[in-house]
Length: 424
Image (cartoon, rainbow, N blue to C red; front, side):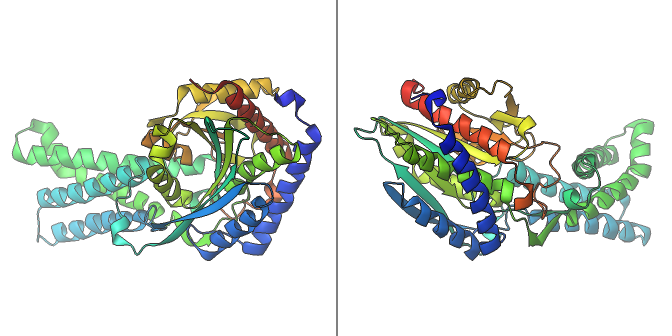
């Protein structure tokens, strides 16, 4: 089948279904912190629905520390502030020298930057050992083909919602997030470089430049300490986003992909279509990382051609793109599959999509691509970022049915083309 032959009434009905279900999920279960009981209750609700049109549904449980991914912002910022202020007091009371103070600040800032790179840039589970683990759950629904399984396409969306980012919620203009984070990260990098140069100047004669560093460079660290105050208050762990757009729209893109095929009576001969509802994306991709680890052989070495299309926020139609680069640009998704999704969008009548880069943060697709599993990401969100991103404004009143519908058409077209052409 081609998307042009698919009943438009089925797509329209499922867009309405999605809006109603997302509203119901939020009203009934509320915000869904990674790994909490609301997350699991919402997944059980969805499983009950999927049982009616899937050949198989199942949960897989894993362990995670939901706060480990972002709580480093608290202790890193506090450590830098204390290092700068306490060392300054010790210098002015003649207990230590400026040279010693520079050494201490250099060490503390380096550790802070290292943790930032490991956790937020590379999404390594670096600080998890410091936290008590809880159970997270991934849910899979499977629609089997009539014959032998030769291909498998998985549509994935995460059901957990984010801790509130104060920079976005309280910011009156979109650049505020970039300004504050740029100040924080840029200040830390400059402080580290200055402290290293100052330490060298204390050991090697660098002339006037070295004297200038020894006398005045420490004062820049106070600007970095001020920036760290904003970082300390960056995450509100007590307030959790309702997550209507990010990412119940992606969740229901996965659910309704199978539901629409069932309603239209579409059966494939050799292509298995799956809906994956993950937990733990907002905790640093923990759910997908575990799934990719557990199912690597099945998805890569079994002889069944497998591809994962992660859908993350279908809201801002002007920014509906195929994200072929991810994790702040450090991960590249499968070129052939990304192109297939792009071609499928054009075939569905949407020729304004572009290849784009998740330049700040990451999607679940990065966890699969990092593991060597074929994947890419489809999303529609203002990268500025949007004013509802990771805060309480992301509620069901901000849903955009037109964007959801367009996303669904692209997803269905991708499924049909993957069944017909595959990637190899």
